[in-house]
Amino acid sequence: MAETTPGGPSPIRVLLADDHPVVREGLSAMLESAEGITVVGQAGSGEEAVVQAVALRPDITLLDLRMGGMDGVEATGQILRQVPGCKVVIVTTYEDDSDILRAVEAGAAGYLLKGSSRQELIDAVQTAARGETVLTPSLAGKLFRTRAPEPSPISGREREVLRLVGRGLTNAEIGAELFVSEATVKTHLLRAYRKLGVSDRTAAVMKAMEQGLLN
Image 1 (cartoon, helix red, strand yellow):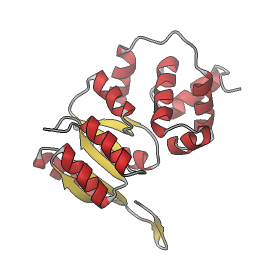
Image 2 (image 1 turned 120 degrees about the horizontal axis):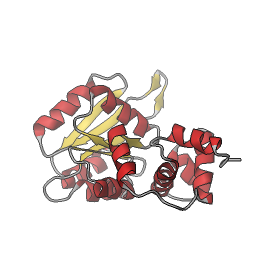
Image 3 (image 1 turned 120 degrees about the vertical axis):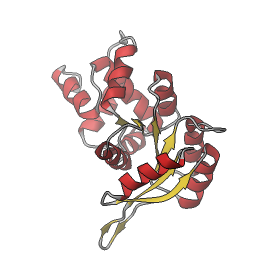
């Protein structure tokens, strides 16, 4: 895992898992060109991703959603159980809403399309490393458009989470403060996003403040 060294913070260590070698090489080239990120390993299946994650202890695992054998959602759960502190970002060509939710509910830090730009990929890795949720705008918009708005108001726990987001806490820090898992924090945030009609943390806090929900 990344640590602060006398010369500054260590690079973010990334494991890539995809069953297409050309995709892995493309992702690796984009990430290795960025300062502060290093690719420590590659895997061609969900099973191999779990083994590599346990052996290499990466900070971030970029994981294809659909591979032969163990899929990305199952691999996500196993990696997070066996490598505490590792963040998993699903990278795929698919935009199916149920898959987005399955990945988040399994504990994934976010979801990114393979067609994302180099900068979006780098930003996603850096965002996940900070303990924040990664959800590309196109996917966020699709998720919130196609799911029926929830009639219930922002819940008390969702308000608590948004207050802590407003204080600058990461999902992991919020979970520790509220004695819940990081995955539970993400679920509360996604529900708050839907209810507020926004797609990111900053907008959610601003909208909640405008509506007097965090007083």
